[in-house]
Length: 269
Image 1 (cartoon, one colour):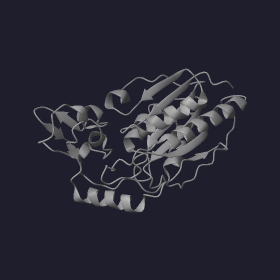
Image 2: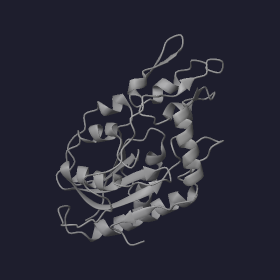
Image 3: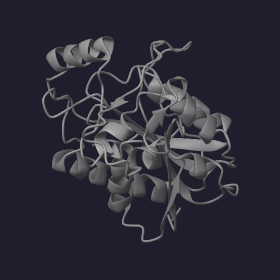
Image 4: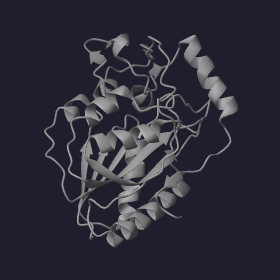
């Protein structure tokens, strides 16, 4: 089969998953690449036609060893008919646990035919300059590995006779799935002395938890702790002040500092 078009489908609040998928697509050397960004509420409301003979790369971050619930809900609007798919999760250098298996099973449920998968590393959502957790990743080495992966995917797909070829993609993980984000009703806060009320935080929030009037208001119950508002605030006015969040961040910094490398499945690298 010849890959004529690649579609990237992702939920990527801080941009790391998007960067990995773009790098994989670049490695395939396919010129026709379309983005289907399901991160923001308006993106989630778009009408997505059924998939057929294109190659789809589906990606999401890992929260507590699982897929984010909002990502799952948005992916569930996708419909395919044995469309070849690459499944990708991006985690913050702790562990991806059952998330990639969860994405594989979800992709099959939606009608995709997963041919390869990978777990890549991205800067942790809770990381800061003072408390680093895989800061700056995916870095140049991660990008190169993603491109090499994309090249191998192209070769594998080219060798297939059809998109409904039987592929036994083995992915590590357990079912029933374990893990998941812990129940915490917390959110970043706004430092009013440095906030310019520019609205950036509201524009990047994947759950529309932030609203802007004369000041910044956050519906804490809607916050998924993705830290998109923290990492994108131009003045550093959005910060985590919750003591438990700080404790978790410090633990991750102390216990997850050893560099991990991407793992891929269904492809010999």
